[in-house]
Image 1 (cartoon, rainbow, N blue to C red):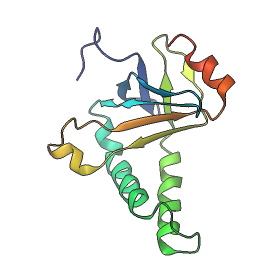
Image 2 (image 1 turned 90 degrees about the vertical axis):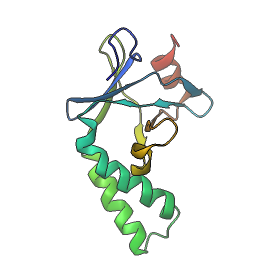
Image 3 (image 1 turned 180 degrees about the horizontal axis):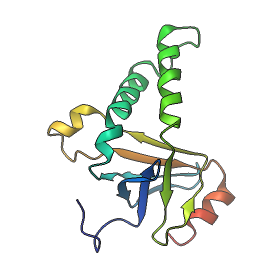
Image 4 (image 1 turned 45 degrees about the horizontal axis):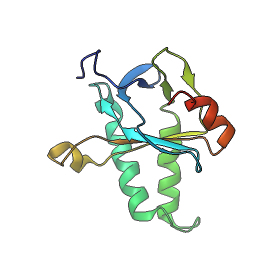
Amino acid sequence: MLDVKTRPPYSVSSKGRLIGHTDLGAADPTMGVRMGDLHTTEAYLDIAPLIWKLSKLTSEHGMARRDSPEWQSLALLRSEYEQLDIQIKDVGGVLIEPVSVEITDFEELCTGAADGHPLIQVFTFDGLIYARLFEED
């Protein structure tokens, strides 16, 4: 667990439970995307199996045809993911309201990969919204 003095400025929660922190240090303003490592808390482990399944299936079948069994499985997992209600708040506790928050993680990362941190991406898809959300960065 990160020391409060050194933790990244954004907190990430699922259904009101803190699952980690991130600095969203990588940016692509033209695409309206911020991303960074998610430094997880123990509560993340409660949702990790769903994230692992979704990440694996997306990497294997993300471009599957809509009428395929793979796409149907992916749609079911996406629906479950949406129920996690992933939210991001800035250091002042203000809710960041992007279009989409995506966490990508693979079970293999938890067993000795180089950095072992899931990737979190925040999508706004709008330059004005992006500037308003991240104007101080």
